[in-house]
Length: 391
Image 1 (cartoon, one colour):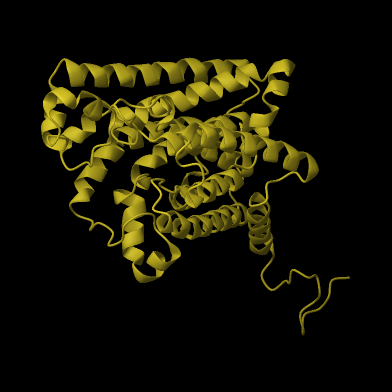
Image 2 (spheres, rainbow, N blue to C red):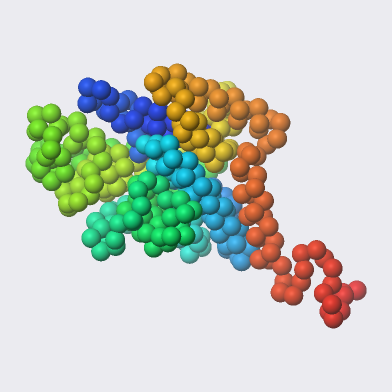
């Protein structure tokens, strides 16, 4: 799981460094291979991690577990809202994802008791029906009155706007992205030491991703969807020059034709299904590959990076906010990857858990301890005044 998370981080770095389109209007390799998929893998592995921290195959859903998940979500959300200030100040073309993750974790609380099959069914339901619901709500819920990433200041001045952004209008709308978290929870409740499970994840993921991609391509190219999507969303660009833009640019969702898009982050059923399938296939491949000791050793740097995703995600946004090496994307990407891997390997050997993961884990642990403490008892172990002390 750590190796897969590490790979998703490197993919996310590439998308943020190289952007979506090259100077000639063609999609960049980073956008073609990692656009949408890296964030999806990140979200699915977040669900797997949530399953791990709540009992794995035998869910633990007592008050302590709920309190720990809530505390973790609030701390991650707080970090994301703080990071939004830096991203907005630098006018970064990076959509900070952490606040959306925090709300995903909170909405996942009622799902922790569910079985893997039920969770898998919910994942498919959110992937197919979620975009339709989002489109219907676009005209009902007002758009947030702020630009850019949500911040702590926005949460104070426009709390409804922040909620609307996280649920519907943002770049990672939670009402659809619950598909990824449900899928991750389902995977985390399985026996991941089983070769059979790994093979099913790999084969099933490839089938879902390829099927969604092929159906979307057929609808776009053979049944007029490409032309209708261009007329509805991209008509400012001449038809002859708009092919790459229509296929790869994220529509704004103003018309129902946007539900045919297969572009990264279009949040259409085809986008969600093919990125969800890609994430499942990658997890299955990693589970099979890491059964071999040489592969595990080779993946140590990626695993180290994946063990501290919050730290490295925040660090890379802050580096991008400085504007360093903006004119040299190759050098910038190389520096981000090298720095992240070297730091992760050294820190993990010397300390263990990542710098930002330490306070988040401590907060979750404290919340669990407080929730599990009997009413009337104190955490310090001293008897309260007027209470008899047990012999």
